[in-house]
Image (cartoon, rainbow, N blue to C red; front, side, top):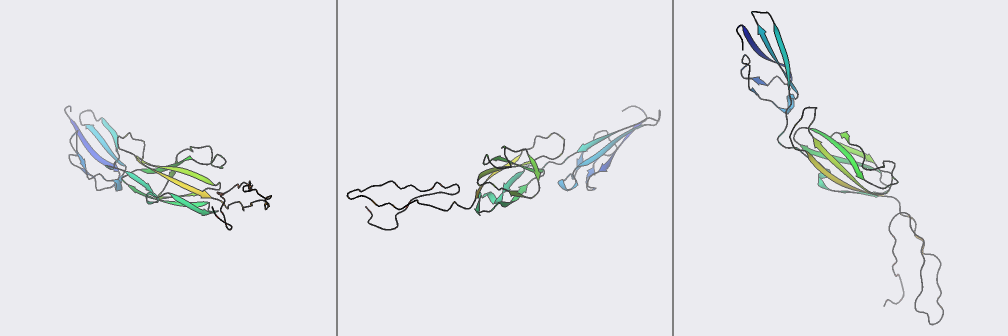
Length: 207
């Protein structure tokens, strides 16, 4: 500092609990920074009493939690009942930051395709409307908020959702009457569009 110069640190924004330890020194420690008061702005003012010049500069401080994580639906995948299309996914998080999600994969015929979708912001829960049957994979990310660069870690979780439509009614085709001496035949059922199909024996002698 030059002769006649004095400095002053002042807080412009953020929680009032922050403490400027040495407000009249060019370099000072600021304590009691927390996520509750984030973001903070501190102003550095340098005044020269000889020249009357005043210089000010604002510094932005953003709190970053030590770790952050995100867990979707308590870590459990979701299987919808028949014709269920609306799925509400609760999110549990730790550390500071913002939540985002994207659908990584799903049926090609879904109106939400193509996959993966773009990242979108989300709060403490997500409600998805999935109208096409099939399996979807949703990725959740908890990351640092704001535009300041940070080396803090990210939280990730992935959730699988199985969407089931009404099964296609089964149709085993026509009855078969075997000629004398025949011991085998071909059964031809109707291929199903929704659900799984299988054959089972209901009566007669089993081998």
